[in-house]
Image (cartoon, rainbow, N blue to C red; front, side, top):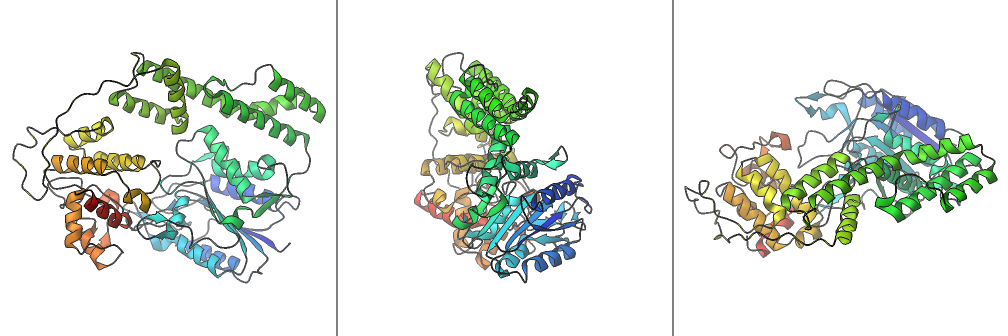
Length: 544
């Protein structure tokens, strides 16, 4: 076995614009205790806390240089992450140091370390086994280093033999704050390293095991859309992080309790109360306890620790089921207004979407619910964005045939809540292609985006903006700018025409002006530039 070395970085103090993160130093110490244990991680550990960006750069470059090919290197970062000041069209992850600061809410990029620098040091390193653990806000944004073509995220640039990145959050989310002195992600990783992630065979707990354990823990505790990421190619998934735990009665009992709770949760779902009732499961645990020689007190303490999040989730499920039964008490599935309220309830409960859908499916099947009656609507004449709108368009708006899922968007547009309407448009589009709200569009998603939905979205925006905004308006401007498909001067020209780029810089989303009288033609709906070439090609096919 070659050298095993780890560089652990924790930043708790920051410059103006950042909140302190005292738990980051606890994260580093807790990880260090596990990794440098000769019977667990067996790493040579170097820790770096509250350093400047230049010190961090120097430490990273020194850590990855001069290594042997058979070394296994682990880099861990706990602190603030930031997407930089390039605006939504040109974001990248930055690891923030002690001197990192913001001005007018924007990161001063020269005061932080770009993830591109980290990636370059990894590329230059001779070591064939590299593990990177990022426990920071927006850590999943590192995937954007690999963006290819028109919005499709690939990992080819980052992937290499024996390389893996474990990230605490997706690109669109902020990592959860500390609990009991540790961030949740680091806490779950340490649980896994101490044996909870051991699959029961083999000499090592590998990267894949740790990710799966952390992901399941987040899923059980239902922390909204906060789910960790793993970026690797085949060999990277199986990099050995810590040794398999030695036989231990308490750990073995913990794994057995965890296994039974998982089985009950999957089998019973809504009927699972979060408790192990008397019966075969209880008998199995009792015989296991006796075989291992554990006292009833030790066994109960282990059971209560495993049980706690299941009890919380069982209560959330029961609450959501109660609200859903109220919504369908007339014998029909929820209408659009009820659906909006149920979505809000689900989000407030921090109940996963998959869980809510399964609850609804179970209740719908048992009650044999019918669909609500459809409300007839008239079909309008198509609005041509190139022609001046009628003066009375806002006073006597024409009806548009809209699926109930578009009613919220139409209501927002009609009330000129442009920013909320823009965000609702994104939500609708990403869910239409079958992805979650925090996900990215892939090229194939937009190539096959349903024409009927694209036309409806466009008609709604064109109608309520009086012909100023909409995908058809953007497509016309895009064609006038040379129909660019890769980033070049024509893209910049397009950005300037629609108001996304000013004085040579792409604007951040919060800098856009959601004012119909003051904005440029085609400014909304806002879309990531990398995806627009495919979107406008689809718009042509759909005859927008």
